[in-house]
Image (cartoon, rainbow, N blue to C red; front, side, top):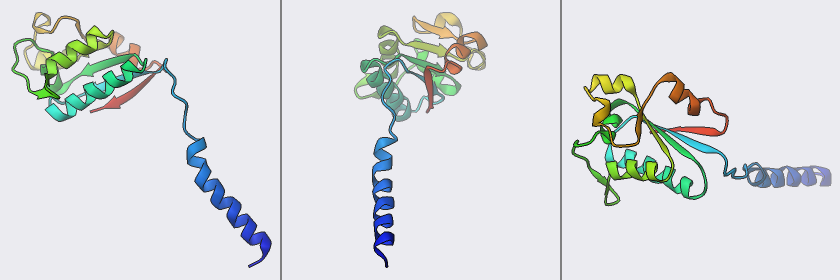
Length: 145
């Protein structure tokens, strides 16, 4: 193997080692997180709330869209399970208290016979206008549970 081949191989190997580190994006505190939550599963829903609130503590705005059976998390007087010693409803209230938005699927409300008065204070019934405000905002990233 010639010196040129060895040198070229070493440069390529160095590039593969360094590339992942240089490709990381810098954290932009203005970027928000739009969480699509479609389950009331305690671990999955709790993890979604905990993850979003940690990012909110770092300065990122957060918004949740509850759909499917996840809407039951935001309904008053529905028995709840707990994640990290807090009921899922307390997690919803924490999101709202920290300036986050919690939107609930209106179609899912109808399917579960939920009325607007049944919702935790601060939870907003969804509409295309309300949802698209976050879903199509280039300053929000979408994550789903």
